[in-house]
Length: 309
Image (cartoon, rainbow, N blue to C red; front, side, top):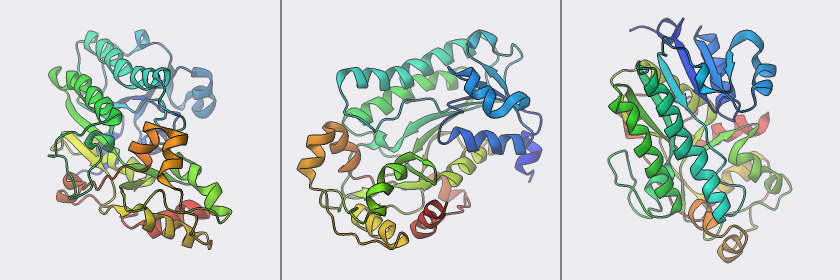
């Protein structure tokens, strides 16, 4: 079997969301493999300051390469957590995902040369809140704003498949990393010894280490047998109370300050109800069936790597 370096060397890759929490290390890995990267960014000066002439930076899709691309990786999207879902915020989330993906599709369609593979962002929010059995890629979509947003996002991305691309819909779990993401919002309280479970703490949390997510994206570029929805999650979900205890243990801090559900709902509204109190026991069936090799399959090792940096 060819290795990733063989497959990606010299291949042209178009990437959106490249300056984000996942995009930055992904670009670094693609460069290691010798890919020729084009980054679309609304902040081209920031992107150029990060990579110089190692990548091509464009701020207008009119500057796409007329010869087309081997791969499109679409990771753009405003953070779904961080503020209440006001009408304006919901519109921002929709515009940065659904509308933006539609725009990318139109420009790619105009090239008349579909990428061989498209990895398009989504999230496990697609499944809504599931309190009982685990869900996998065959499970139907759920209810709620996050589920509806993901469903619309994926529906628009189907246009790439119609154009002839192998489409992978990356349903991403909570991404853990040392310098941002969800963990960055949790760490201050836990470092001060006042962190703890959210609500009852019984809700399932599905997660993935950022290094494994980057590796999974590379795997999807490489393995032509994989298409459709792909759950980007660690092999086993964990209950929120156990996640909190594990994180506190890694920091040598206590874990007893439970945050009552009514307060979370008061602060975050529907965002808190769906994302913080909602339950998501997601099984990455496609990755497991194809024996995807996780670097951090267990939570203690993943958190240890994150908090030591």
